[in-house]
Amino acid sequence: MNMPCPHPAEAAQAAHAASAPDGNLYFFDYRQARQAAAQRRQVPTTHPSITALQVCFYDGPPQSDALENMVSLPFEQIEQRLLDLPYQLPNQIIFPDGTPGQFIAEIGRVFEQALLNIVQRRKLLAARIRQQLKNQRPGFDRSAPLRILLKSSRLTTVMQHCSSQLAQALEKQGHEVLLCMEENDMQLLDSYLHLKAQAAFNPHVVFNINSLDTQHLHPDVFYFSWWQDPMPAISCGIALPWRERDITLSLTRNFDDYLRRCSCPEIRRQHFCIDTEVFNTRHDVKRENKIVFVGSSYRARLRENPGERGALRDIVARMEAGEPVDEAFLRPLSRRWGLEYHRVYWDLFHYAVRDVTLQWLCREAPIPVEVYGRGWQDDPQIRPHFRGELPHGEAVARAYNSARYAFICHPFEINSQRLVEAAACGSVPVVFDCRHIAEPPHWDEYCRFFRTAAQLRDCLREGNAPDPTAIARSSSYDQLADFVTRSVHERLGWALPA
Image 1: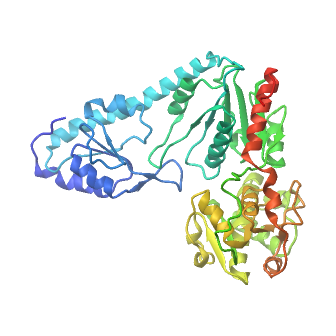
Image 2: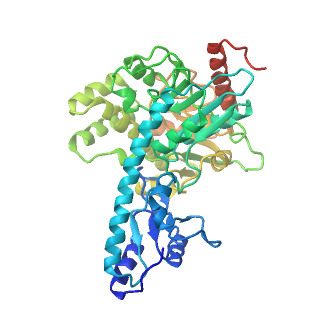
Image 3: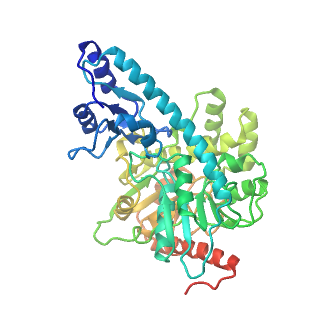
């Protein structure tokens, strides 16, 4: 698009917009776009703590020296092209210095209307695709591989890794697999883009974590839902539209209760899995007499009001006394402080077991402590031990391999993902003792348990400990992939593959 002659009156406005962006940008000047892209700014997403690499769209054809976060987008194509691009829409136009104000106003109106049109068109197209999928028969053929779709988002901390690792295990079995998820930290997929990919792939099987998104599916499609968190869809207690070909997996008994209240007809237990090719003992990593923790802070869940402060104080006092914390204690406490039980259990109790016990560790440990994850820089007691974030996978495995002990703190579950990952790497789990409510196995012979700060200190004293790798031997994604394959073949009446 040809720009008009420069006009100095608008230079200050363009410079201010470029210096304080809060989203993706559109440029008419390629050089300005490249300068902005080179700064690799992070911009907000719909997640409170996960950002995106800023994308700088520019008017004109692709350029050979464009950076990875630059996208060629001729202005006359902006609505049609942005409709299907997997990025957040740009929210600012950066004009060249000296662009006349009349031109800025005119282009701004066109730009704003194009963005509104994109949002509306995506809604209409998504509705049309949902109707299409209802009538789209997958067509099973026992001589051809199954098409299996897994949907996830990079705006998750655990789910995306579960989905990608299961996808790899299913591919090893010979299935045709589509993991519908962002490819990098610039992309964000909305429901329209997910549905478009699903319609093109036409899966026999859909596997989703923490979601029952089935009302647009053909009855022949198998749907696996694996519940790992107390999502509003199941915690509200309203009956859900379960289908004959729905197969429901639950991480723990707590979620079983939610699912039964939603009229789920059958539930199968599925603990967290690990990629045994990543999480294993490394002889090239020196193991030191230290303890590591990997996980995010729950500090952001706290609210500053007297009721919640009082309830949290009572929970911590009971923990410090070594008394068990369970529903029998928490329900009366929630009533006494005028709080919802769901809030007390899933936020305050979880904060106490995660953040407060980690504070104990940092205060009491007779050996070095290393903390990795999000949000710990805001806790003055933990900050001196904070070593930054670790990308999931090899980096986490190396951290566990480098330490004699791994700190595992979960309010009601022994068989957490972190426990299995740490054990697979040969790091002795030091575990918050919730065996009174946790589902077995508890791995008593391989773990060291604590309820108080004094017990935690004792866990870290020298002494022989059995090799904990036995914990991990039954927790592979290959086994979960076998279950998916076996379930589909059995319901279709097919012989299992060799």
